[in-house]
Length: 496
Image 1: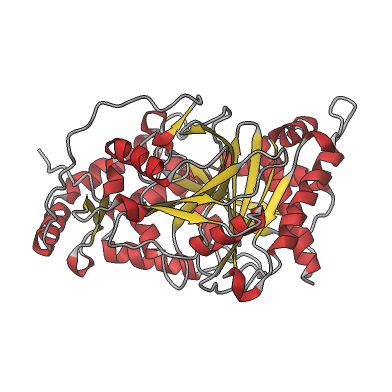
Image 2: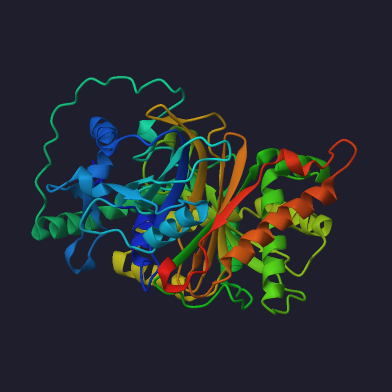
């Protein structure tokens, strides 16, 4: 019987996120979550985390690196784990505006996570101004490294605290005291990695067979899988147009969001005959086109290449940590100013991409990285980061459509964050929650000083699209969609 590889070893895709972390590019996913009600006491939050840490054991583990880069890192228990280091207490100065919350988030997102400790942190933020109805509010800002969890895995350190009712968290049977396992020595790490590599051929053959077999419902034969992989590779190799979005990034960040009723997009896609994702991507295309033209960029004939991550996590894998994502390269016609024409272009393009098997091909290529020698895989990740294969990343993650509560306080909004790569000064993350859809925009501080204009352009684009889609059956009622937005203010070094 062949040796079973270390289940705590990072996959090739997870390890790639570590290799991409260079020159100001920090690979953590994040969120800014707001709640109604008085903020809970810090000690109450700390106790709630402590009582449930055993539900997410990975969050008490850190990375152990194999000497000489002879294997991918492994997760090991952190003998010095300190919950108070990871759960932090912050406050906004008066007046505690949403813009100040966005500025704080931008500063926190610019700080890399310490690789010598578990790769996550949560900030309880007090001092947020009351809501429009005068009710008190507070926020949480959460960061988790992409190597640990992706946006659709369903389990992270905060989700174990959320409930679907305002009732207190149910009491848990006290777990046995946590005792960290001894850290492996460098010699042990190297020996295990080399032993796994020596026993890999059988695993590689089985893995290759699995890649060629499944999923049968998507591709029925070997040639189909190879065609899909080729489609993805060809789409990724063609250069994308030069834009102000594709410049070397610095160490500082700006953050902003637009939050709107999801019915705005449902009405739009129903009237125009497409999908919700078509309406989202058409909004991004129209908004970026406006912003580029304001910047003085000639958008005549310009089609941006957007990397759209797609979850390939099987239903029986939901809740597992680690990354199961593939990607499609979607074209955005930023030259087009007509909302109807933009939607039609995106709808047709996305249909073609789905039929081409690009997402399946991306999963094939990502899976093959598990069998590549670590040094080769790391170099490939670095090369990808340096090339201009796509202009920006746009993620769209479905969230729960029912209210969630933290220690009895209702969650009012989730503002998502996805990381910037080298030479990509903007990333757009979209997430739905409880009948709302939020666009979270993370930008390089210096490359996009006018993030506020871009936020406004996104807001205007979604309304233009909705007005263009109005019919007698789908009337346009802007007052029904309750738009909220915020962004890091242009306040020079003080915002940094």
